[in-house]
Amino acid sequence: MSIDSAMAVATDVLEPVGFTSFIYDYTPVPVSHEGDLITPSLMALHNVPRDMQDLWCKGGYYQLDPVQEAALAVSRPFLWSHKGVQSTVMQHVLRSRHDPVISYLLDTRMTCGVTVPIRLAGGDLATFTAIRADPETGFEAEARQFIAEIGDLGHLLHDSVYAGFDSSIRTCQYVHLTSRERQCLRLAAAGLTAKQVAREIGRAVRRLQRCISTRQHASLARATASTPSRWLPTTGCSSRSIEALRLTAPPVSANL
Image 1 (cartoon, rainbow, N blue to C red):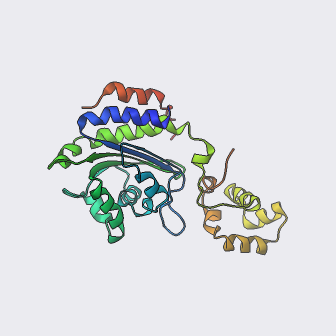
Image 2: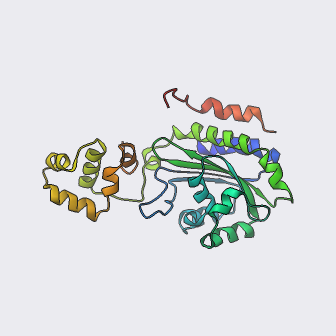
Image 3: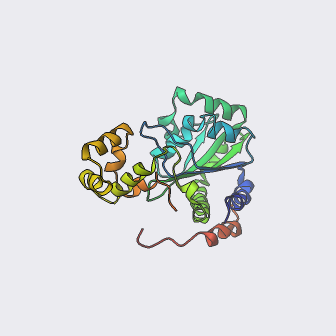
């Protein structure tokens, strides 16, 4: 299923229970070495202001989004509200640096929502968010009743679209490596020591170590095999609508 089709299904399911806007994003590597959020390689938005995509993907707002920080800290779906009663999850995250994003959401009246963190075995992170614009007083209590269902829907949406992601989406664009650096990291990811990598590529160990230090890839060389691969290019809900997502999602292996 395409991301547009999946978002349309999610809209059909959640609009009748009061949600108005929807966001899905996916990033193969969610955080940089410096601890900053990495802009997602895919961000799909439905019924949001026109400038939101550019602000989040090009204007640095994604790095200032407290909801994304919270999605890194918890594994369960959570409620957030910038006008009503704020959730405990968000209270632990919110800081003054998030003010530009909160001001934007207040200005656009997208002040309440439920976000679903979706973590993959390789370290990838996706989130699905259902938002209520202009929520009436007490909407938080109503939204809480649907948190579990929105969580299930978010995972079904992700499963239905993930198989269709190409290498450009599944590859982190935050760091660009030379062909030699990619070769070194592939060998390191395969479990070779620095001496073995140096012997394989015909370089002195000290030169290899200087290269890794200069490019700040030492942490990648020490990581597990699955982590470096994400940095390298590779070759009241409608049960009928939910079932459409379920049928397009690939089966989950029992070994996971």
